[in-house]
Length: 341
Image (cartoon, rainbow, N blue to C red):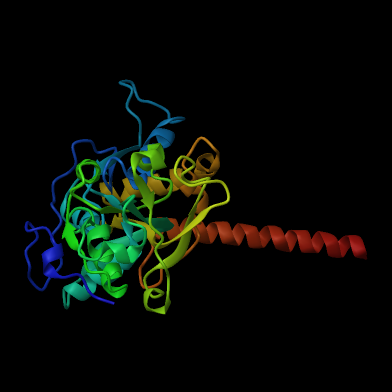
């Protein structure tokens, strides 16, 4: 496992042996919680939009139509840069980011206090590696010496895609373009393949068919990848226009989580995040229906993230929920015992 190199950090962050400093200004709207995500085409941005839209409904409004909680999706570069936005920008309260990259962040800054600045609210879902290639590329090894877009510099695709290809001993000419530009370049024959790291299905990719001259390349899994990557598959239900019924394509994935800045207790931003957590946890079942992205159904709010502290109000809510469930089980057991007497 590698730590994040200084080259992966935005140049605005001082490269010294300390954590980045948070801007102290207050966001334009004190009732708005900023959520940093990936590019607008990513599943992570779609999840953030669904979160914002759903939680905005059902709230009481003030005399001017204001609501107590508004979630604002913020377009980020993805990967570790989302976390750096949370650590440095006043309006960025939360971020969706890959756990494996966040785990490495403190290793890149010796004696840093990043872990005291960052907490998590809940683990989220798997983000799959989509390796989309031109029709003349039949297998992964065919990419040797070819031009491959791994995503913008510092993104999960750029950092982990490079590691993945090196581990698989596939040497490529790396370029770092946004998804729209990369798809155009692949259509022009200048790029042989594109790596997209995002939760399946990625809406933009569902429109493609084999007649477009592109297909998914399988990515194998083996012991050298098991520390950081999870095995996953694509099927017809994910991309019906490009994957046939009964077909399955192997790939790998990484876990993502919802992280937050560790604002001082009782501060306005802390209380805003506390309200966000209370609202999300109490209304979470609303996200599990067919009208929402299927990735919501992978989320387990009670799952833990080893090595990281959970946002305290979220921890308290989960503890109360567990205590309540335990009380119900005890009451049920007593009822059964009384009936058997």
